[in-house]
Length: 179
Image (cartoon, rainbow, N blue to C red; front, top):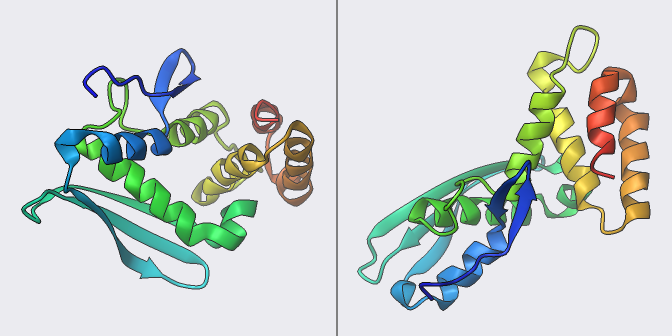
């Protein structure tokens, strides 16, 4: 699989590999035959989870790890599947740390989308408090998680109803780009 072409998502002219592509490569490439991908619960409450993914070689030696954190209320998907979503993110980071799908970046397309949106819409006085900047990133994820244009529009409107008074016009414009 030396010439394997990862499917990517283009963000600002740079290609980012998605987690499913990293997992597929890991499972199919002969050099990782006999390797295992494990998940370790670091922290779990009714509202938050932190998971560490561990990749071991055929000798049971740890060759890569990745960690992720999720909040249950962060998005519509997380409201029912925050543990599963966190595990997927941890796997993606561990596989990236193993060297899979990192020609342009270790970060996944989802991580980069949130980071760019946050950079382009820094909270200012009277908006989302500096210690709660995750609300914006989680709003981006919520909108992106919708599976159709109309569902994205609904998600966007729900975000505005709940947090709109806390977002600046610049943040609202940035969110609208994900609809």
